[in-house]
Length: 201
Image (cartoon, rainbow, N blue to C red; front, side):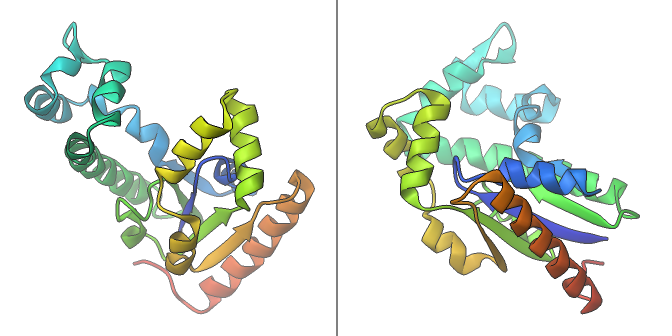
C-alpha cells in the first residue's frame, strides 16, 4: 500500500485532483468528509458537551452555531481542532487499515499539514494556483466579494509555507485539460516512488 497525502488551499483544485485519482483506481480517504461525521460519535459528543455546550441543539451539534462560536474566537477554534483532529486521525487510521491490500490510498485533507495527518503518508502532494486565479474561482464559486474571499484565503496557512512541506507540487492555475496532464505526471512519479520502496509499512 502506497499512502499519498493530498492537500491544497481553498479553490486551488484539490478535490478535482482527488476525483481524477479516484477515476484511475485510487482509494480516497476523505478527511474533510469524515470531519462532518465525527459529531455522530458518542465520545466526541461528550467532549463537545463539555467544551461547546451552547452549540448543542436537541442533543446534537448544530454546525452553524458552532461555526459562529469559533469563527471569532481563536482559542475556542483551537479547542475544536484538538477534539476534531484527534477523532479524524483515528478514523483515517481505521480506513488505512481496512485498505492495506490496496495499491494506492490517498488521504484527501485540506488541513493535512496543520493537523499533522502527513505523518500517515509516504509522500505529500500539494495542489496550488496563483492567488488571482484562486481569488476569482472562490468569488465565483461562493458568490462572495473579493474582500470576503481574501479573508478566507488568508485564514489558511500560506501556499508558500505549504510548498516547503510538500514532496510534490501540482500547479492548477490553468484549465482542466492541463490539470489532467499534471495528474498523469503525478501517476508516473508515484510509480517511481513505489519502485524506490518509500512505502509505509
